[in-house]
Amino acid sequence: MSLVNLVYRGILLLSHNRWPRERVIQQSEARFRKMVTYAYSNSPFYREYYQSHGITEKDLSYVTPGDIPPIDKERVRSNFYGIAPDPPKPNEVEQALQEKGLLSRAGKYFLVHSSGSTGEPTNFIYSESAITTVEANFIRLSLGGENAITLNDFPIRTLYVASVGSGYASTALALKGLGEYRSKSLILNIQEPMQNWAERIRSFKPNYLAGYPSCVRIIAHLQEKGSISIHPKKVITGGEPLTSEDKVYLRSVFGADVIDYYACSESLLLGVGTQWYEGIYLFDDMNYVEVDKHGRLIITPLYNHAFPLIRYRLNDVVLGFTRDKTGPLPYTHIDRIVGRSEEMMWFKKPDGRWDFLHPLFLDDLNVPGIKQYQFVQTGDASFILRAVPRPGAPSEVLKKEAQAQVYSYLTKKKLEQIRFGIELVDRLEPDRITGKVKLVEKLDTARPANGG
Image 1 (cartoon, rainbow, N blue to C red):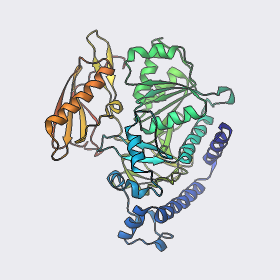
Image 2 (image 1 turned 180 degrees about the vertical axis):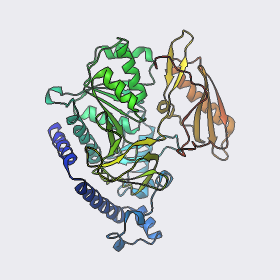
Image 3 (image 1 turned 30 degrees about the horizontal axis):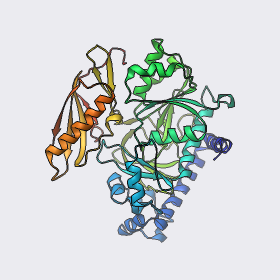
Image 4 (image 1 turned 45 degrees about the horizontal axis):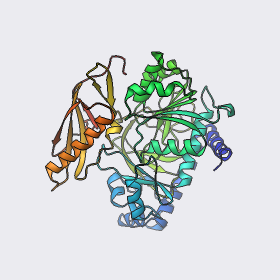
């Protein structure tokens, strides 16, 4: 798709911001029912799954969303090829998983995987048109706010700071868009030693700054110290909660529009928060959204027919979910997300300088035989890796492989002096509030005084 066509689609999406709430709901519900019918007709998994719950094809025209049984990550993992109407070949998926590139292709699809913090990573596929639809939403975001992007800002120059392991949703989205539309980009991999960042940024003049909030804050600290001088129009963060204090701080440092981008592997765009309104709006024209009795978000992406997810239950707990018209936009509104805060681990080097290991960098850990894991920081130069082995997995082999992978991470960050141990445990205790196992448990609050 050309840049002109992409901008046109983005402007159409922007026009939805002015629709009456009733029209937004009506469109979302109609597209939900259409997606359910499509999945029943084209996906062997859904046809069998619904029939097992007494739902036949003639029922689809009148059943309510609540009548349709939800699915979760485990069911998707077990039925990957049955969910996709036209699945990639197993060897194409295997090859994509083995590639070390930043964006994986499985036949004609893009392959994206979830993190392993709540269990085994799970694979999802996206069609080319689905990715394009999500990219058009960046036009919707860019044309709004107080610092609108104009034609004079093209080609877009983006400073992207995050984990760039293969298959992650944020990477797939950023790199696909940055490459196709001739955007210029500087990608700072959080695996790189932090001492190299300022030098790489100085000669680059971005009008977008994007990445995890914890990483963007470090860029802001560099700006405050005078190590860099950049003037982005948009600061887009995602992957972690963005606090009100963060919004004020980033706005004051950069003078940019601050956008909190809410996405996941299951849907590459759920909603956004900004500094000019409270909370987060969930785009009903992209997903049909619900919550269960525990406040967990249930989503049905309306734009990805390659891999239909019907009433998929996330682990995210949201507060203040309402379908009532709230504030300036006509979309479903939430106050905030509970349970997505994964703190980075800061460590002190022998020379007194600090550097960090980011949870989503550590989340690439992949040891066959380990079902689940958690990092526990015990000091400013030590941590423990707790791992739950699969039944029958050889303990010593698991420990040896995990130790080798973790040490390779430390070596990349030049943190070889950090002490760590491997503990095999029967289970990991979930957080009492969110029900999720924290990827990082901090028994020590070590961190530099200025956050980096």
